[in-house]
Image 1: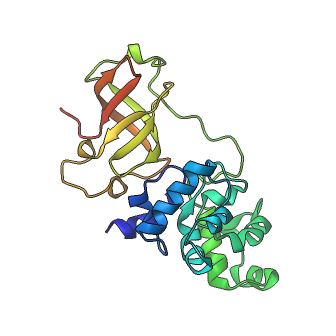
Image 2 (image 1 turned 120 degrees about the vertical axis):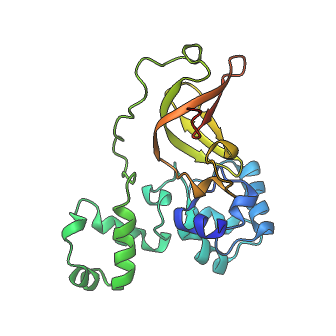
Length: 227
């Protein structure tokens, strides 16, 4: 279940745990641990191609994994998509075009690429949230909440999911630090991973504040509303 979810939505290599990375196609737990070690020693990944420098991650594993890895602040905007690096040049040719009106057969012949490959690239470029270096739409945070001391337990906020880990999700609610929804606060039913409920860049219109740590600037949130 988790591997299907991971391979459907992708994983941010710079924030994912070794456990989560191990579910990516072509990557097992040993290589996943090597990826985390490489990042700790060399800093965040800037391009998917850096994965080839990770111990034990060869060309075959890279071929399988690259389409499921995401890098938010990568050298290429396409590093934050499911587009394989080998197809970046094709994706660049599509920038600025009305993707909804493209004649796929004609364009595939023009670019010298397979029709199904072109369809996959177009699908990725059309996904909500994919924005090549343009300003993102304004996030509709709850009005007036700009400081943690303005919150209280039981109040409600809105926000955007910025990162997902094995244990929960970090949500931008308009404050200096992201709030956190623990996996146990995401559903009334037991789930095995946050990706079953949430996705990166998902807007959450109503989240309950369940805990506030003023000293450390941490806010606990819940999707399971108490009323």
